[in-house]
Each structure stands twice: as C-alpha cells, then as structure tokens.
Length: 238
Ligand code: CAA
Image 1 (cartoon, rainbow, N blue to C red):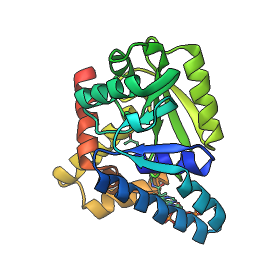
Image 2 (tube, rainbow, N blue to C red; image 1 turned 180 degrees about the vertical axis):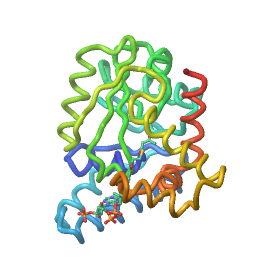
Image 3 (cartoon, rainbow, N blue to C red; image 1 turned 90 degrees about the vertical axis):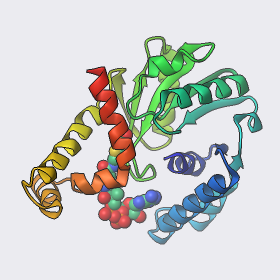
Image 4 (cartoon, rainbow, N blue to C red; image 1 turned 90 degrees about the horizontal axis):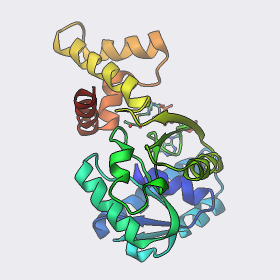
C-alpha cells in the first residue's frame, strides 16, 4: 500500500520521501508507481507531464533520517505491533517539531502505537484502501490522545488528496475491517464446509450484492496474511 500512498501524495503535488527497508524494494515501489501512473495516462485521467512531475517528487530512501524535519509521515509496514512501534520511534527522531505521524494500520490500536513516541497527540490512523489511487475512502482513527489539530490537519489533507474521510474510534478493526473481514471469513467457511465452489461464492456477492470483487478474490487481493492478522486482532480485541 505504501507505493499507492506515495503515488497519490506525489500526484497531488507533495514532495515525498519513500522509505523502504532495502534498495531493491524502493526500486520496485517506484516501478509499480510508474506503471500505475502509465495506466492513468492511458485512460486520460492524468497527463504525461503530470506523471513525470509526480515521479520527480518521489525520492527513494532507506531511513526517515534521509528526510530530516519532515512534516507528515504515513507508516505502512506489516501489521506487527513491535515493527510499527520501532518504525514510529525512528520517525519520531527524524520529524520536525509538531509533525504528524500517521499509521496506515488496518486494525491495530492507534493508541498503543502512539504510546511509542514522545507526543502521542500527534499520532493518528490514516487508513487507505487498495488500490489507493482508485479507492475514495480514507478511514481516520483518533487514538485516545490524538489532538483536535492532528485530526483536522489529517482530515483536510485527505480531502486535498481527493479522498473522502470517514472517522472511526480506536476499536479493533475500526469500521472497515470489523465489517469486511468477518464477511471474508464467512466466505472461506462457505468454501470449507462445501456450501459451494469458490467461483459461485464470489458470483453471489458480485452479482447479488454488487460488490466489485467476490470476497475470496478480494481476500487474495488484500493478501491472506493481512486477512489473518486482522482476524487475530478482532479475536483478541473482542
Ligand atoms: N493504480 C491506478 N489505477 C488503477 C489501479 C492502480 N493500482 N488499479 C486499477 N486502476 C484503475 C483502472 O485504470 C480503471 O480506471 P478507469 O475507471 O478510469 O477506467 C479503474 O481503476 C478500474 O480498474 P480496471 O478496469 O482495471 O478493473 P476493475 O473495473 O475490475 O476494477 C478494482 C479493479 C478497482 C480493484 C475493483 O475490482 C475493486 O474496486 N475491487 C474491490 C477493491 C476493494 O474492496 N478494496 C478494499 C480492500 S480492503 C483494504 O484495502 C484495506 C484493508 O485494511 C484490508
């Protein structure tokens, strides 16, 4: 999701530092962004000049230290609390005073992530949906100590990115995954119990409920590892 988030920020005119753990991953992310921008150029949604300008605004890096004094960060590492908090400590050390540190977590506690930095009032959940350049939603999650200013800036920034913000409290899975993942899990149960084939389960939800993808296809699209991580957060949290 990180490449999609960088894509959208750069296209809307923000200078982006894309931090990856390895150079190969940063190169891969840039290639994915270029490919998705090409797709938008081919559709006439973006001009070739806008594409070039967006790509020129993205600087690959291996540490937040390469963007000292940044004002806004969106973390999008895997759904493991200890990894999130270690990244947040690194972000905290490199940020400008008053910078906002957002997490794209799909279900983990924003309050718990915020406890890893000096000033938890500057931490917020900014949850994008895949594919980020296409999906209009940003779910915004306030931790217990998130300030009104942090919330307002993040909300306004979402609007500047062309997204529609929706607010959620810091409950496990927020709104999106609290509703989505149990549905996906039931589709998996339908398959496991032999209710139907994977094709027909997806067809029921596509044609019967007008979902763009069936739940089993969507589970593969999101990644089964992410689906499992979210279900475990829901199981423990509830
Ligand atoms: N970057 C840029 N543009 C993209 C893109 C990408 N990665 N992927 C698709 N597009 C564009 C296409 O160019 C196309 O544009 P136009 O409308 O201008 O023609 C449009 O999106 C539709 O794409 P396609 O025609 O290729 O394919 P499609 O009509 O089958 O749609 C889809 C593909 C948008 C992925 C659609 O199937 C869909 O909406 N699926 C459901 C996605 C969903 O539910 N996402 C949420 C997952 S949950 C999550 O992300 C959060 C979490 O915490 C787990």
